[in-house]
Image 1 (spheres, helix red, strand yellow):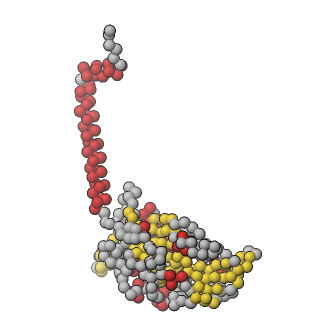
Image 2 (image 1 turned 180 degrees about the horizontal axis):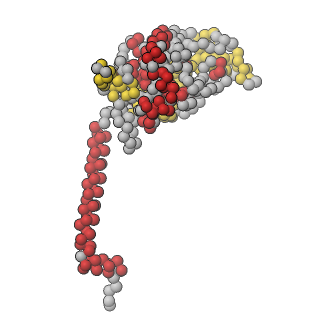
Image 3 (image 1 turned 60 degrees about the horizontal axis):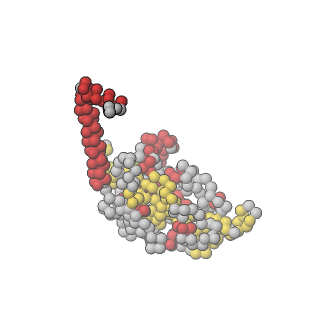
Length: 361
């Protein structure tokens, strides 16, 4: 019986007899091995880069031992302090009673821990998530701290950081006074990452998005920040000088590039303060203090610095003392000890306390 071959093999056999396949085979195999070698080289480079990348350090903030519970106070009703505190407090509504719609209530004032902030030189490093590092497959570049650069014959110390912003309503998560209407009700969430924000790493691009930057880049505007430094360290920052971050520098440009890095404590705190300022500027953070906040949050495009306190929780938690949770712009020199240190102490986490005035029924 005669064997019937498929059409493919008939044509392939003719190609072999004509010598065409013999000439094409080496070229195809050469391309195959070249692609395989390139893939292996790329994989090896990625593995080497991952192995050589700096280690991320950090720990989950302990909700009991790493929290400055004194920062909750003073607790007030109207203009009267039920539980006083040595920490400065902005003014509260004077009347103890309030009205939201048709429902009367009492005007409470207190401080609530609501957000977490990472500050690190290592992209996609999350100190407040236990030192977790992710690899999204995109290259951002490492930051630096205290890198000396020559500018006009003078040595200038600078720094560059990435920052992350978490929703962290601690009282609600711990189910403390779950029926209290004034506590923020939300789940834990990573709300913002600067690694995917091109304006955070580029001063020029940030100035295009936030054009008021050029107004506050003059020496006279920066000299005014000295008054904010004194006020923020002694009591409360000056909200009128909204472009100032007190002793730490300027809120502008709203980037992770710090041109006046004196110490790691100072420059990292400035990056965290810029992060909060940026959240207000982009309407991702709202106002909660004063008469306007009694019945709910309101739009606050220019952050009032008196609304916030910053407490360090990574690598060393600041839990005691008058300066454990300072307002933005407060001097880091008044801290009892430095909370950052080389290598394992360069990934920092902050807990953000927010002033809340609320009409509770």
